[in-house]
Image 1 (spheres, one colour):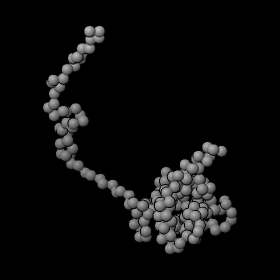
Image 2 (tube, one colour):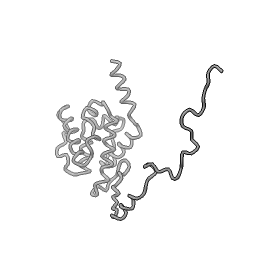
Image 3 (tube, helix red, strand yellow):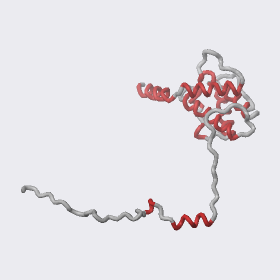
Length: 184
């Protein structure tokens, strides 16, 4: 039992209240509605309905059916539909949380990380003009070199290749330059 408590404490320690607040504000701005007052961040997201609505705002029709009733299985279907839509939208698999992370509140920090990954991915979609979450991802800076420029680099010996710019080892003594005599 103590190992389970230690794991829960470690996962709870990963949570960042400021990031959760930013993610909540972003969701509220995207949807145009506030979270119910007094409810916890993870409790509002638990059934997946809000997450599916966010995906439908970002990419209309990406989650065709959102279950609003029907028990645990139907609510977990919402989370799975959200995850599928995320991946189709361009979020990498490694950034997507597991269903139990949210449903059983096992790793809410990972849920927040997924929301930030989604927020960053919106930068790559020119059709999305709404709010963004997180920093803008860097873009490729491809460079083209001419054959002449590539050949010019072949004649230069870099310092890491062994050139020492005229330094010598003169004055260094190798071997036993100083003798230690014991007993005298």
